[in-house]
Image (cartoon, rainbow, N blue to C red; front, side, top):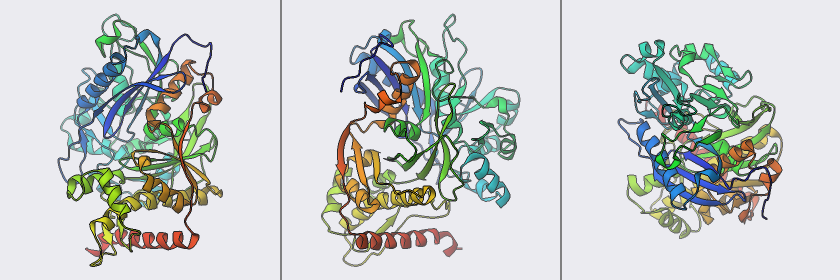
Length: 522
């Protein structure tokens, strides 16, 4: 279907996605097609066990490079770009100098576990306050404890914060700051220091009901000065995020593109999957696996296992919320098999190995490399294989690793069904894992639901572009955007209930052993 409109003479929107493993820029036309695309790998550093860092300057340089390549490789005229959207890895934290823009420490990535002791020291009352106020479970995964660690360990940082020199932000705030830093005389010479509701809701210091930074939690996590935090704006806003300056790249030649949206990556994927109705659900299989369900305009009821988070917001509109299950390691387990222990060389080899055996023969793998996220929230859990016998081969291990991605997603699906009281019959899936026929069929079987795969797997960058175009008037409304979604493949459940429950019982037993690991060695 071809979409036509008279809102603008522009031809494209641009979307920038700064993820964990890579940065991409896409140019998207009015029919929702990506007409130009550029990608660069984001380097990660592991300076100590459990630590994960990135160089903020590398992230920014990758944005500049991919923007230039996406525009110039197809000879896109900058004047034909209606607006731009930003999406990003959410809980990763960056600190930089307000005056020079120079990073004051490496980005502490969401996977980083150095702050786990800070979380362990929280008492039950404080934990309950965090859950009630922010919708999140106390965990090192989120940004707040990273701020406290930086204030406690980086020489002079606390005094620089109090003097108004040091600022903290998630990756979107860092990228928007750099994109909008203009040359003298440009429209926004002073950089924009802002984030949106969806990213703020992942910091563990943001009140998702009152829509403001919570001063009690800011004090708890190191005495954070509110002036050191970005302004929180609607996810879609025509003027809150400034314009991409020609200082960002010479390709703009004095022309400035308005940034009209900012959205966390998982919320962007939910938007890109056009999950606009309450109950709509998507699962993204990436470095981690993230399952989100649209919860409508009201904060979901209290959940002990799932996260309550902000989906997106529009300028002058109501907040849209989501229920989320965050699985901290899934695709990373495949990379561990490839690069960590060098047993198989690629994702295809892993899938081929898994399909050489007819079942897991009782072998399970729990990828708790840095604890377990939803629905268990156990920072002390550790990864394990269980059920090994003399018959166990590398093929069984490969199958167990692939199956673990589905079992963890099924944990979340069942939790969402319990929370909402509704059976989930359709799930939209994306991310790298959605390219695996084995994985998606097993997901359909274990969830007893249809699994729908879109024509494009780049739903995060597409969703960011959709929201930007909706805000700038490139598209006229959600119904028009709905029509842009195209089905690529569908998987239907075929497993008998008895087999499904037998496999799931084995998985839950493996998880119990994983969660008992820390106490068993004390």
